[in-house]
Image (cartoon, rainbow, N blue to C red; front, side, top):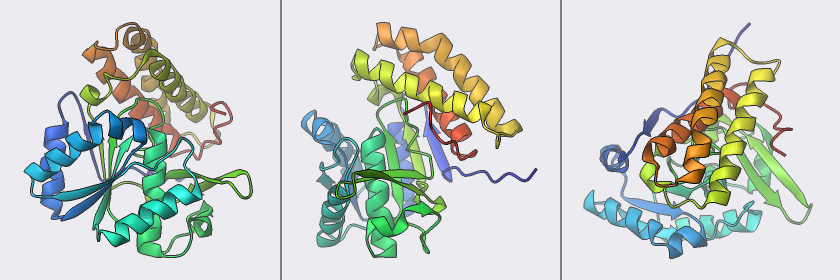
Length: 264
């Protein structure tokens, strides 16, 4: 059996790791970021917080808060237009699955050109996307570290699945301090999303010893920590363990081409 394993080049996880992540970002030599997020995180000041941390590293940024739930082609096109207008040289996704997917679409089109629908399917792009740093604020989708990008085509009324090694972020960041504010409903929903990813990967016919190990550990961590994170969102130990759990689940399903039937 031959297995190919996809994962971002660098992954920083743990309580308070956002500061270490900023140092890592500075070392890449980037000049200006397009921060892709949603209106809720922008209104809550989270995007401004990240922009401020970038300033401390000598990096400019512009915020695009147009990532809607289940991001659309228009969301990608509007973000891409802003990126080009402001001459950003890299992208930061800030949030959960929707901002991450929207940012992937923007970054992919920025370097490959064309329309996001051109890349529907498997490995349709010719070039790596514009560098993408994915900062996670939920513990469920693992989109911050996968090669999956889901964009809604409203004209066709379908969700386009873009499965492409070139949409894998350069760096993923999971700081539990940025997950404490999740309400109970979102904690539960994202936690169950992570669980289904782990189960899907484990029962996949393409599973291998690495994905099985990741999936089993993810399931154990979720079983032991999701209730605590739900009951007390400020329980930083439970939040950190859920961050690891969803990342491990992502490592598993990202590398077995899971069909995600349980998730949907």
